[in-house]
Amino acid sequence: MGQRFKAVVNSLMRDIFSNKLAPGDKLAAERELSKKMDIDRTSLRIALKQLEALGVLEIRQGDGIYVKDYMKNAGLDFLRLLFLQEEKEGEGPVIDEYIIDEAMEFWVEFMPLMVKVALRRITPLHIKRFVDTFNNELEVIGDREKVVESELLQQEMVAEATDNLLFLLLSNTTRPLRKKFLEIFVSQLDKETMRRHVEFKRALLRSDLATDPRGPEVISEGYKKMMIYYRDVARKSWQVTPEDDKLVKQFMASVDAGQA
Image 1 (tube, one colour):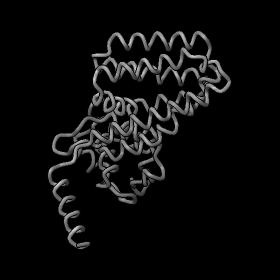
Image 2 (cartoon, helix red, strand yellow):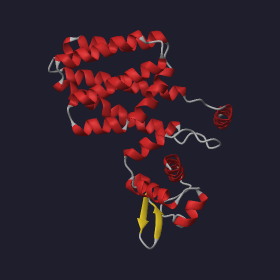
Image 3 (cartoon, helix red, strand yellow):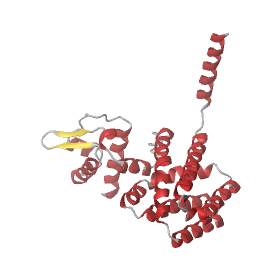
Image 4 (cartoon, one colour):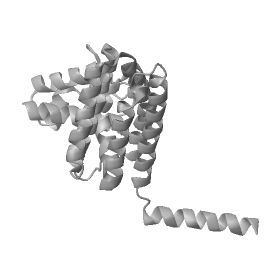
């Protein structure tokens, strides 16, 4: 039951996100949906209830089930579950680079704020734990998967250091998104560049800035610049297809011809 239930949730989420099911659309009757999706009606109801809780469906008793506008009603949990989905054969990834870029834009603004709050409350024990994590990462710097996990851990340690419930919950919710960003970022860097990146973070936290009253502002601003670099690295990784390149060149040639 568990796998079928998840499959139904994932399938409907994909259709809603890709606009195959548009806001205001009415789903088929329960009996028809159950047969079409090869699931018993009890499990189907559980799946529909979860989607209603996510804000993407409205179940109207005696009327039917309607699709809601996820842009107006869904929360980060909806996006988190989309990121967790595997690529479906024949359909491509549910999350494309444009959605990743929008999420990155949010993270570039949000993470430095979290760093600033954490630094205002940081203790020598926190600093020691961070430095230990940086040292551990340097030991596995050639293993991209372990580097990603280490970078994720550091971000979660920042959230914990804020001692703020909302920062902690947002950090938990956005973990799949952050992992995707980091996978892209780490895949684009060579071993030596990644080493310098970690050593810089370690040096920054060991410096007097960590306990200086001006430290939170200075370090968070530096962190923001680093996040912007993450985003720019990710953008460079998105491949331009030969067809796209050809169209752009044809367009530029026509522009040049018109100006001649």
